Image (cartoon, rainbow over all chains, first blue to last red):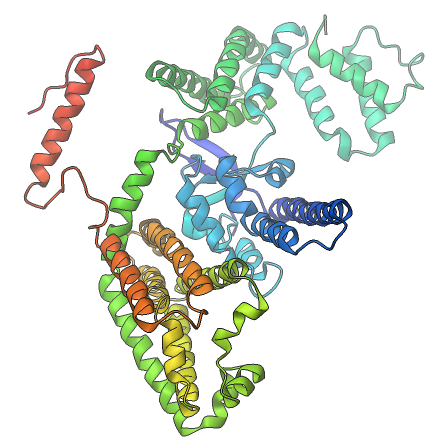
Length: 245
Length: 357
């Protein structure tokens, strides 16, 4: 049975829980990164071809293959080394992981070191077998912490991470200070805004109107009945941010 | 007992200003590439307060958005605090001078066994192709077979196909994939690594037998003299490391097989770096020197043996000298002197020097 959370021992004795990312998040991040590195590599090849063309036009003779060979080698290097280099440079993140809202941590919740990240990437050789990361995907589906072989060997886990958790806490604290609403009311607005993109338009407008009618003294249900989704959302956000924002 | 909403709200409102400043401090700490001692201590202080508040929030407001926000912020700060230092020059030196020889020493015996397996497989390959010549189609492609049958070795024609630099890059990448593959396949209880070595040995012996049948064996040996010793040794080392990985799964030394595997992989990681660097060198030799028919056998032998000796010196820890070599007898006194130097360092920094017993 797969675990939902990774519980790590905090330095002060307070356990910290991290939500483990599933195969869906992992695949989404991988595909995003794959597209990015493919585009980079192809862009470089295209640049090489353009440079060759410019050289040919300027010198009025057919240039050698040097430019294309160099561009090809660099393009292959980008394609192959993208993951190890980017993960090490971004300390366990990649653009794809960031977009998917995930990051790599060690089983102790720490930022993984260079060695662990390199070992994790080395085992892609096995995880990618026979095609389309089938070994890795099968491992993710059947392991407790939803890890592929590389993660298992390197002692890393993919966890869900908010885009900027520290700033998010600061923003919420500021809202708590400014707003006169009760905690329960704030929680309701927060939940609705969080689920806003996944709700149907009619449903979310109905919920927003009901909430605003109760919590916002300036909201008139009869006058603002025709308000569209974005306007209602903006009103809820203003209510959450408190007066003066 | 559920906490009344008003009490929870009051608790939060009382701490909200502090959270704002803590969040700002945590954000700075997470983005800081380096930290002074004071900054590190201040970050630890922030972490301590945040985790205290997290513990209280879990009691007062389980599952609320603020508890989740505190949880996320604490996790982020935890990861920021617990991070390995960046690879500095000193760390690289330790890696090249100490970690790599240590990892090589830990698989020395296994590497010798793997080398013996390679030799045995090569003999088996030689016997197989000598006895059943038609089986050469299993280990060589039709173009190679055709060329050898007409008296030409494929090894000296490669420069006609690609320039040396491209050839070196191709050879290097191919060798790295084979070597790293031998290591990774070791995960299958060591059997994958043994399979790869046996297969390579069979191919090597078979090709030698095939070229020998057509009077070209000396040419093939001449071609491999310069780069072969290191290339084959590195393959044996990587396979030995893979087998050690498999052994960690079969006979775990820690509480679980996964823990044991992780520790062994971390210990053997530096050896793979050494393998990759050594293969880079042999790729360059194979691309630039080996295919040139004009290079004489003594030169090839000199390069091959020289590079192999260099590899042995490095892997045995004799290539990069230490300022003070640690021997088992001197180990205790070295530790004492390190503690004393820590104490002197603390004294110089303005603080009281640590007392060394």
